Length: 143
Image (tube, rainbow, N blue to C red; front, side, top):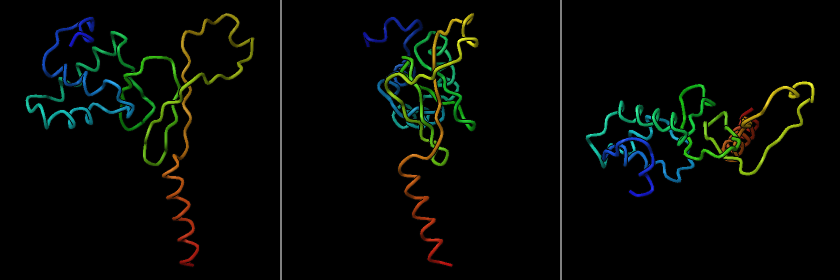
């Protein structure tokens, strides 16, 4: 638990379970997904504890709250600047490693200091694209 000692709040068993679930998690889980994943091993967990812990981690800069899914907030333990691709069908969120930059007009940014950059690309992931293609081909045979 030494890696969590500087987290800035008391480490209860519930909070430790949340931190361990998030550690290295690339799935961008929602609070409800975190709660359901932990509940089986820690039946004393409450959804309110998950929400308050996530809010505290976000406030302390230890977690990014993503609002890119209009249906629910997602959480990203990777706090480094990076962008995301979001599948509009299955809602999967994929990290884009490396820098994604767009050239902005000088007049737009000349008096503005950019601190962070996060680009969100929406589309279909390979699985959903393949399913859509198969469905379209199937529809052609039915006619």
